[in-house]
Image (cartoon, rainbow, N blue to C red; front, side, top):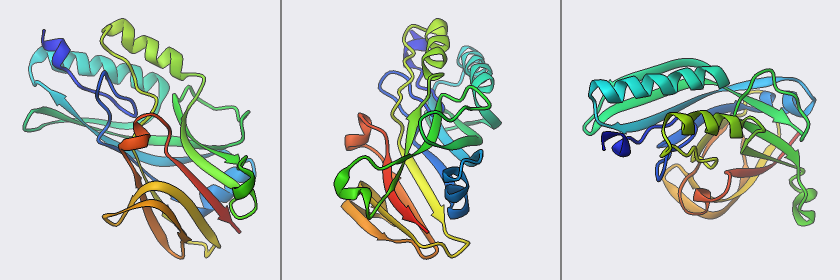
Length: 218
Protein backbone atom coordinates (compact mmCIF):
# COMPACT_ATOMS: atom_id res chain seq x y z
CA UNK A 1 0.00 0.00 0.00
CA UNK A 2 2.86 2.35 0.83
CA UNK A 3 4.30 2.01 -2.65
CA UNK A 4 1.06 3.34 -4.10
CA UNK A 5 1.63 6.58 -2.19
CA UNK A 6 5.10 7.19 -3.56
CA UNK A 7 5.45 10.12 -5.92
CA UNK A 8 9.00 10.46 -7.16
CA UNK A 9 10.75 11.39 -10.33
CA UNK A 10 13.54 13.22 -12.01
CA UNK A 11 12.93 14.99 -15.30
CA UNK A 12 10.01 12.59 -15.40
CA UNK A 13 6.91 12.00 -13.32
CA UNK A 14 5.10 9.00 -11.93
CA UNK A 15 1.35 8.49 -12.22
CA UNK A 16 -0.27 11.90 -11.71
CA UNK A 17 3.03 13.48 -10.60
CA UNK A 18 5.66 15.69 -12.19
CA UNK A 19 8.81 17.43 -11.12
CA UNK A 20 7.95 20.70 -9.40
CA UNK A 21 10.04 22.38 -12.09
CA UNK A 22 13.02 21.54 -14.28
CA UNK A 23 15.37 24.52 -14.28
CA UNK A 24 18.06 24.99 -16.88
CA UNK A 25 20.44 27.82 -17.79
CA UNK A 26 21.28 28.52 -21.42
CA UNK A 27 23.68 31.16 -22.74
CA UNK A 28 23.36 32.75 -26.17
CA UNK A 29 26.80 31.33 -26.96
CA UNK A 30 25.39 27.83 -26.23
CA UNK A 31 22.62 28.37 -28.78
CA UNK A 32 25.10 29.52 -31.42
CA UNK A 33 27.46 26.60 -30.81
CA UNK A 34 24.65 24.06 -31.03
CA UNK A 35 23.28 25.56 -34.25
CA UNK A 36 26.79 25.37 -35.76
CA UNK A 37 26.87 21.64 -35.05
CA UNK A 38 28.99 21.53 -31.90
CA UNK A 39 28.14 19.28 -28.95
CA UNK A 40 26.80 21.37 -26.07
CA UNK A 41 25.42 20.54 -22.63
CA UNK A 42 23.74 22.90 -20.18
CA UNK A 43 23.19 22.57 -16.42
CA UNK A 44 19.83 21.56 -15.02
CA UNK A 45 18.27 20.99 -11.61
CA UNK A 46 14.96 19.48 -10.55
CA UNK A 47 13.26 19.29 -7.14
CA UNK A 48 10.73 16.57 -6.39
CA UNK A 49 8.55 15.60 -3.45
CA UNK A 50 8.26 12.07 -2.09
CA UNK A 51 5.53 10.93 0.31
CA UNK A 52 6.90 8.85 3.17
CA UNK A 53 10.29 8.64 4.86
CA UNK A 54 10.76 5.07 6.06
CA UNK A 55 13.38 2.49 5.07
CA UNK A 56 11.26 0.97 2.29
CA UNK A 57 10.69 4.32 0.60
CA UNK A 58 14.37 5.27 0.83
CA UNK A 59 15.41 1.90 -0.61
CA UNK A 60 13.12 2.35 -3.59
CA UNK A 61 14.35 5.90 -4.16
CA UNK A 62 17.95 4.61 -4.22
CA UNK A 63 16.93 2.11 -6.91
CA UNK A 64 15.59 4.98 -9.01
CA UNK A 65 18.88 6.81 -8.55
CA UNK A 66 20.74 3.86 -10.07
CA UNK A 67 18.56 3.93 -13.19
CA UNK A 68 18.95 7.68 -13.56
CA UNK A 69 22.75 7.43 -13.31
CA UNK A 70 22.70 4.89 -16.14
CA UNK A 71 20.94 7.31 -18.49
CA UNK A 72 21.75 10.86 -17.40
CA UNK A 73 24.90 12.93 -16.89
CA UNK A 74 24.15 13.17 -13.18
CA UNK A 75 26.14 15.35 -10.78
CA UNK A 76 24.14 14.98 -7.57
CA UNK A 77 21.11 13.16 -6.19
CA UNK A 78 20.36 14.75 -2.83
CA UNK A 79 17.69 13.48 -0.43
CA UNK A 80 16.40 15.61 2.45
CA UNK A 81 13.39 15.64 4.78
CA UNK A 82 10.25 17.64 4.01
CA UNK A 83 6.81 18.24 5.53
CA UNK A 84 5.29 15.26 3.69
CA UNK A 85 8.30 12.97 3.62
CA UNK A 86 11.35 13.66 1.47
CA UNK A 87 12.64 16.14 -1.06
CA UNK A 88 14.87 14.99 -3.89
CA UNK A 89 17.11 17.47 -5.66
CA UNK A 90 18.68 16.24 -8.86
CA UNK A 91 21.41 18.18 -10.65
CA UNK A 92 23.31 17.36 -13.80
CA UNK A 93 23.81 18.26 -17.44
CA UNK A 94 21.31 18.19 -20.29
CA UNK A 95 22.31 17.97 -23.97
CA UNK A 96 21.47 20.97 -26.14
CA UNK A 97 21.34 19.57 -29.67
CA UNK A 98 20.43 20.92 -33.09
CA UNK A 99 18.54 19.07 -35.83
CA UNK A 100 16.80 15.69 -35.94
CA UNK A 101 19.77 13.37 -36.43
CA UNK A 102 22.27 14.56 -33.84
CA UNK A 103 24.01 11.57 -32.26
CA UNK A 104 24.15 11.66 -28.46
CA UNK A 105 27.19 10.64 -26.44
CA UNK A 106 24.97 9.03 -23.80
CA UNK A 107 21.46 7.60 -23.38
CA UNK A 108 19.70 10.77 -22.24
CA UNK A 109 15.88 10.35 -22.18
CA UNK A 110 15.40 14.12 -22.67
CA UNK A 111 17.27 16.84 -24.54
CA UNK A 112 16.82 20.49 -25.36
CA UNK A 113 16.50 20.28 -29.15
CA UNK A 114 16.84 23.15 -31.62
CA UNK A 115 15.04 22.77 -34.93
CA UNK A 116 14.40 25.03 -37.88
CA UNK A 117 10.95 26.60 -37.67
CA UNK A 118 8.41 24.81 -39.86
CA UNK A 119 5.58 27.32 -39.42
CA UNK A 120 5.59 29.54 -42.52
CA UNK A 121 4.32 32.60 -40.68
CA UNK A 122 7.14 32.40 -38.12
CA UNK A 123 9.98 31.16 -40.35
CA UNK A 124 11.33 34.59 -41.26
CA UNK A 125 11.11 36.46 -37.93
CA UNK A 126 11.94 33.35 -35.86
CA UNK A 127 13.94 30.80 -37.88
CA UNK A 128 14.63 28.50 -34.90
CA UNK A 129 12.72 26.81 -32.10
CA UNK A 130 13.98 25.05 -28.98
CA UNK A 131 11.98 22.54 -26.94
CA UNK A 132 12.42 20.02 -24.12
CA UNK A 133 11.90 16.74 -26.00
CA UNK A 134 12.23 13.02 -25.36
CA UNK A 135 14.76 10.94 -27.29
CA UNK A 136 14.74 7.37 -28.62
CA UNK A 137 16.11 6.28 -25.22
CA UNK A 138 12.98 7.37 -23.37
CA UNK A 139 11.12 4.09 -24.03
CA UNK A 140 13.81 1.92 -22.41
CA UNK A 141 14.19 4.44 -19.56
CA UNK A 142 10.45 4.18 -18.91
CA UNK A 143 10.57 0.38 -19.14
CA UNK A 144 13.19 0.10 -16.38
CA UNK A 145 11.01 2.06 -13.97
CA UNK A 146 7.95 0.03 -14.88
CA UNK A 147 9.85 -3.17 -14.06
CA UNK A 148 10.48 -1.87 -10.54
CA UNK A 149 6.85 -0.94 -10.01
CA UNK A 150 3.95 -1.32 -12.44
CA UNK A 151 2.52 1.95 -11.10
CA UNK A 152 5.50 3.85 -12.47
CA UNK A 153 4.89 5.70 -15.70
CA UNK A 154 7.50 8.35 -16.58
CA UNK A 155 5.79 11.38 -18.08
CA UNK A 156 7.43 12.73 -21.25
CA UNK A 157 6.12 16.27 -20.64
CA UNK A 158 7.84 18.22 -17.88
CA UNK A 159 7.46 21.80 -16.58
CA UNK A 160 10.41 23.98 -17.58
CA UNK A 161 12.08 27.12 -16.27
CA UNK A 162 14.60 28.23 -18.89
CA UNK A 163 16.96 31.01 -17.87
CA UNK A 164 18.57 32.56 -20.94
CA UNK A 165 21.64 34.76 -20.51
CA UNK A 166 22.95 37.08 -23.23
CA UNK A 167 26.58 37.63 -22.26
CA UNK A 168 28.09 38.04 -25.73
CA UNK A 169 25.80 40.91 -26.81
CA UNK A 170 23.96 38.78 -29.35
CA UNK A 171 20.80 40.07 -30.96
CA UNK A 172 18.27 37.65 -29.47
CA UNK A 173 14.52 37.81 -29.85
CA UNK A 174 12.07 35.22 -28.48
CA UNK A 175 8.43 34.33 -29.09
CA UNK A 176 6.35 31.88 -27.04
CA UNK A 177 2.97 31.38 -25.39
CA UNK A 178 1.47 30.34 -22.04
CA UNK A 179 4.51 31.59 -20.16
CA UNK A 180 5.28 33.20 -16.80
CA UNK A 181 7.95 35.91 -16.67
CA UNK A 182 8.88 37.61 -13.39
CA UNK A 183 5.58 36.58 -11.82
CA UNK A 184 3.45 37.83 -14.72
CA UNK A 185 1.52 35.43 -16.95
CA UNK A 186 1.38 35.91 -20.71
CA UNK A 187 -0.84 34.10 -23.20
CA UNK A 188 1.66 35.28 -25.85
CA UNK A 189 5.06 36.86 -25.28
CA UNK A 190 7.40 38.43 -27.81
CA UNK A 191 10.47 40.47 -27.01
CA UNK A 192 14.20 41.12 -27.22
CA UNK A 193 16.64 39.71 -24.67
CA UNK A 194 19.32 42.31 -24.01
CA UNK A 195 20.81 40.68 -20.89
CA UNK A 196 18.67 37.91 -19.42
CA UNK A 197 15.20 36.42 -19.28
CA UNK A 198 13.55 33.61 -17.29
CA UNK A 199 10.72 31.76 -19.03
CA UNK A 200 8.54 29.48 -16.89
CA UNK A 201 6.27 27.04 -18.73
CA UNK A 202 4.20 24.91 -16.38
CA UNK A 203 0.68 23.47 -16.17
CA UNK A 204 -2.19 23.90 -18.60
CA UNK A 205 -1.19 23.00 -22.14
CA UNK A 206 2.22 21.81 -20.90
CA UNK A 207 0.55 18.85 -19.21
CA UNK A 208 0.19 17.43 -22.73
CA UNK A 209 2.94 18.96 -24.86
CA UNK A 210 6.57 20.02 -24.60
CA UNK A 211 7.66 23.56 -23.57
CA UNK A 212 8.60 25.41 -26.77
CA UNK A 213 10.31 28.73 -27.57
CA UNK A 214 10.80 30.29 -31.01
CA UNK A 215 13.84 32.52 -31.39
CA UNK A 216 16.03 34.56 -33.70
CA UNK A 217 19.70 35.01 -32.85
CA UNK A 218 22.45 36.93 -34.61
